[in-house]
Image 1 (tube, one colour):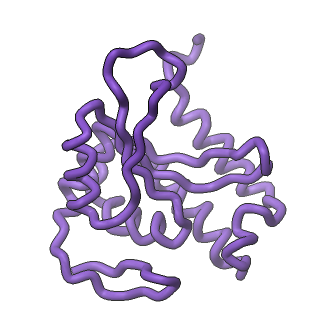
Image 2: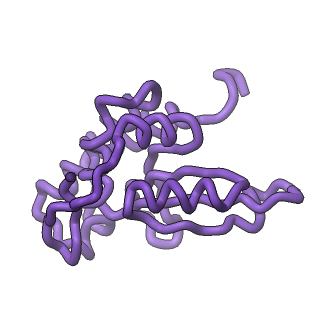
Length: 160
């Protein structure tokens, strides 16, 4: 059993989930981060798991019983013969519950999880209305979290 947000309320989820397996899947095939929507100049938490095999991504979503699956047609602007599917979770409250369940099992990306939890906690603890979670001004600490997360999730080496 685990706790899950449903329609703004925390409920007990009866499904047994192997959080160790979930953590390893996300560490190996996913990402933990924040994104900024340039059109609105705001930040949001995001968890993603990627694969070219739709069945892998759908199985992950069924295992965790949350999030949505999407098809990335342009594959990051790279020309590819294979479609790229991804599972995504980005609700502040859902991300918090999810990360709290996997953080102790993460073999990598633990620092990203800690930073994202801190960011989500700051946003939720300031009593922001759910519509204003992204639009309210950001503290110095929140900007530091975003910049550190961006650096941790950067592809390539230091000199690239």
